[in-house]
Image 1 (cartoon, protein in one colour):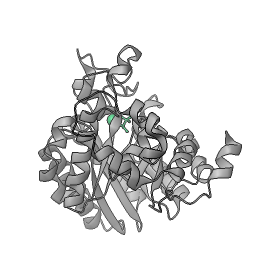
Image 2: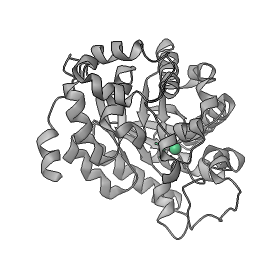
Image 3: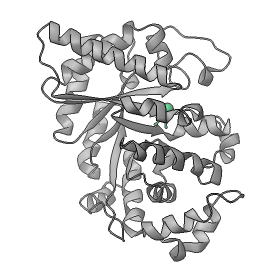
Image 4: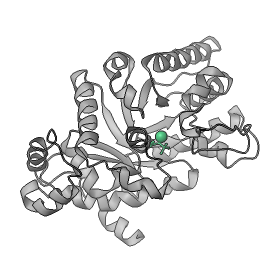
Length: 325
Ligand code: PEP
Ligand code: MG
């Protein structure tokens, strides 16, 4: 696999019909950062900060968090890195935080809900991020936003921490950017309201599809109920892309759902030119996208997206060339 990565990493990120795209890396641990070079990824599209908490026996202190974030930024150099604030709960558990017993963890007290209800931890994390980014760019992404007010409250916390750093005479980041992670269907239909305060949007396709289809992302028995290439799911993605484009807010997709080559091509055709994925997906996705005629694929999709029917996968594979593939 390493040899395959090596061959492809310098291939330009352009489709057969000349449209540029960006492939970024999902990561959560320092050891994964060497994949940046190996894959030729454009940056870190999603740094899952909870991993540091999940592998530790005790809660990482501000200093430890700062050291990690700083090392990630160093490894990225001029490439951007998006830090997602703690996304604990649901499928992400940690030994260092009290275990919670909830009947439906995926629908429970998790991610930004914890961050807003007990703001201590999130505040310290923002402090660590601001410190690590002294003099450089900071991109912060808030997970599991289910309503605009949650995003506004999180943005207020970021602003408050910036003010605090300023008062203490710390060097501030050169610039800071707040991102909304869109992972719930309800938020997809309230996105217009939140966009004025969003510097960017990242669609968390794993969770978004889990909630859209009411099918557990980790349960193999229901994985065939979870089809990103079905017209209703694609209409949701189209709606979000169009809403973001209308307000000029950059939008990307992360999540393993978008890291399959065919799915990635379809998302690109819907206007998502930035995709973030696991390192092992970058080479296969790049290989297909380099060969795709995105305009042709877009035209093929346009006539089918609003029609009833099940997955478009079979149709796409049969159409091949006629769908730009
Ligand atoms: C997602 O939900 O799509 C996502 C990228 O976040 P995670 O997989 O960490 O929940
Ligand atoms: Mg998620």
